[in-house]
Image 1 (tube, rainbow, N blue to C red):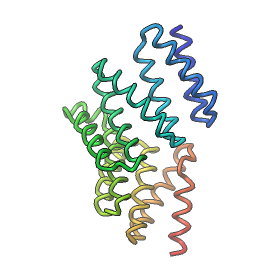
Image 2: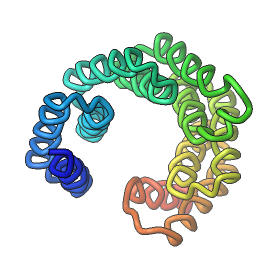
Image 3: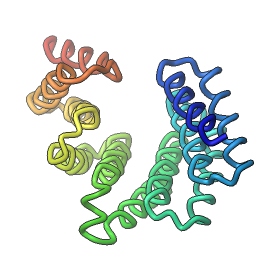
Image 4: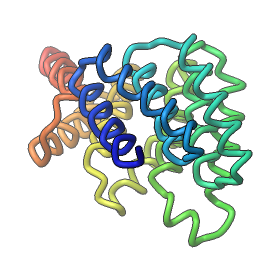
Amino acid sequence: KEIEIAFLHMQGRYLIREGDYEEGTRNIQTMIEKALEIGDRDYALEGYKQIIYYCIQTNNTEVMMKYVTLALNLAVECNYHKETGILLRLKGLYKIMCGEYKEAEELLNESISIFNITKEVADKYSLNIAAAYNYIGEIRRFNRQFSQAATYYDKAIAICEDKKALSSLSVFNINAGQAAFEMGDYEKSKYHFEKAYNLYRQYDSIWRRSVVEAFMALLCVK
C-alpha cells in the first residue's frame, strides 16, 4: 500500500501539472484515502496540498478552502512547524483570491513569523518567506500602493537571487514589472520584464511567459 500511495502521488502530481485535472485529482483523492487508511498522515498532508495547488490553478476557491482547513488542522495536530507556515501562506493566498486583503496580509505575516523563528529556520525556508513577501506585494499592487508593492517584490527577488530559484525569480520579476508599468515607471518595468524574459531561457517553462511578452510589446509601443 505504501508503494501504491507513493505511485499515486507521483502520477497525480504529473497529471495535474500537465493539465489533466480530472484523472490527476482522482489519483490524489485515492491516494489520500489509502494514506488515511494506514495512518500515513505525511502522505495525506501531501495529498491535501496537491488538491490546493490544483484549486489555485483553476481558481476553485470553494474546494480550496475545504482542503486548506483539512491540511492546516492536520499540520497543527502533528505539530509540523514548516507545514503550518506553508499552509498559513496558502490560506493567505485563498483570502487574496477572495479579495479579503486585510485577513490575507495577517495570515502572510503570521507565516513569515513562523519561518523567522530562528536564523537557521529562516535560511532553510527562505523561499517560503519570499513567496509570502510576493503575495503581500500583490496585495499592495491590487490596492494601487505601487511603491510599497515594489518594496515587497524587491525583498522576494533578493531572497530568490541568493538561492538561485529561477522559476520563482521570473514570477516575482513579472509582478514587479507590472507594478512599475501601472505606476508609469516604464524604465523600471522594462528592467524587470527583460530580466524575467532572460530567466525563461534558462529553464523549461511557459508559466506566465505570455504575460512577459505582452508587457514587453506594450513597452515597445510606449
